[in-house]
Length: 292
Image (cartoon, rainbow, N blue to C red):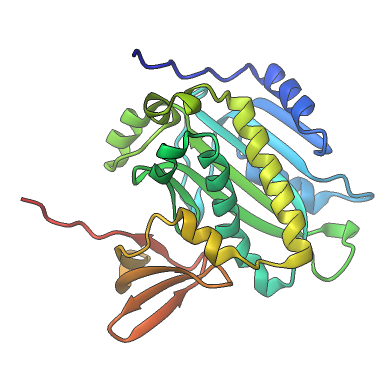
C-alpha cells in the first residue's frame, strides 16, 4: 500500500478561519505567516494587558524567526514543515505548583496525539520528561511552558497566565537529524506507519491539543494535579531506562528513571535511593550503550 502524503498546512488566513470555527471557547485566535516567537508574543501581550480578561488566546505561525525551546535553546523550523503555536491560559495555582504545568502539558499533548493513532501504534508515541513527545524514541515535538503574573487584571494572588507553546515536526526529520546529529521524527513518518495519523489534518491537530490543554487546565484549577503520576506512567518513555541527569554539560546524577511524583518531578533511583528532579533545573538524556 503506498504511503499517504503529508497533509499540507493551510495558508495562514485559512488556518486562522478553521481554528476560529473549531475553537469557539478561545477568545482570540491568530495565525500568521511569520513572527519572532509565538510564546514571546503572548507573554508580552499578557504582561501588558489591561481591563477585562479575554482568554484563552491562541497564536500560531508558519515560521518563527527566533522560536524557543527549553533552557534557551532555539527551535529549528522551516515554513510548512513544522506546526508551531502557543496558547495563553488563566490559571489559579500557588507558586509552588507552577512548575508542574510543564510535565502536565506534555502528558496532555501526548495523550491527545495518541488518540489520533490506531490502538496498536499508541505505545510507540511516548513522552520524555519533562515534556518532549517522541515517536519510537525519536523527538517528534517539543513544548515550552512559561508563566507570568496576570498584570493589572489580576483577580487573586494565585492568578497567573500560563503560555504553552508546542512545535511539532510535520516533515524535514531527515534534515533535522543530520543537522542536530541525533534521530528526529516527524508526523509524516508517523503517518507512514499509521493510516489514521496520516488522515489527521494540521488544523485538527491544533484544535485537539488546544482544547485538551484548555479542559485540563480548567480541571486542575479546581482539583489540582491529582492523578498526574498515573497519567504520566501511561505515556512514560523513560521508565526503567538508565539515565543521566545533566546540568550545564555536567552529569549530576545517574540512575534508573522511575516515573514522576505528585509535583511532576522526575524520580531517579540509584544505589543511594530515590531522588526527585525538578522541572526546569536539569535535562535528561539516556547514555549511549555500545553495541556489537
